[in-house]
Length: 232
Image 1 (cartoon, rainbow, N blue to C red):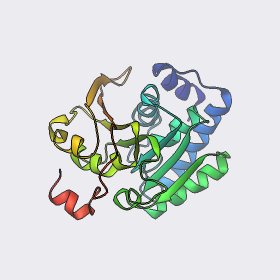
Image 2: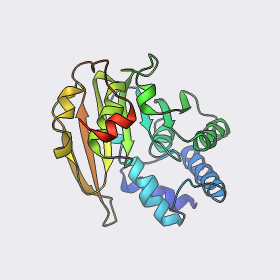
Image 3: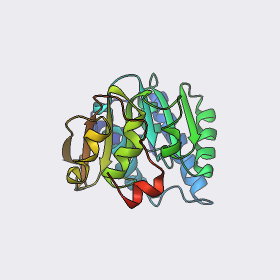
Image 4: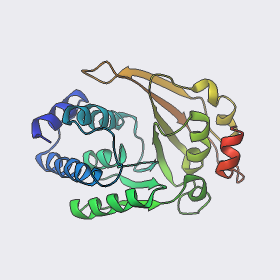
């Protein structure tokens, strides 16, 4: 990916990235496209489309971050977590995905880029959220377009510290109507949603912001079959 393409995506998000970070992003995209030839990491392979749908979209998460730690649930090929980490090297980051091959890709990438304070974890959110090293340990949890909001809340909010927040990166719809019952049950406060276009495009996006006000009851999250069959 051309340096100018990355710089333009960053500029549209209000960022000015150092040369080292741009080089790291170039390596990331190159490795992504190489690996994508043998496994499904992204359906988006054109340079400009990657810049809009992956880079710019991920960069726009940055103003919403609070605190020093973040968990990216269902990270896939590392979006938005890896881009956020490259832009904010001091952030403590955990990338979670249920597909072992994706985690192996990210582990190799983390090592190649020489990143610290970041780990890639193979597992399911509903299991990790009951483990002491993940439960209510993060200032921010984020999920990008991986499931409906009511399901995401039960998977992710238990991993957020009281005082932190869950961010759901959605498309056109905020899905807040689905979440009205789940949020208070899981310890969340009043949710809000910001609707916007990706700068320079006609692509609609929504950032759903759910503050964590009190600890989540130990019964949550339930097994995924129960979550899917009967969302809160």
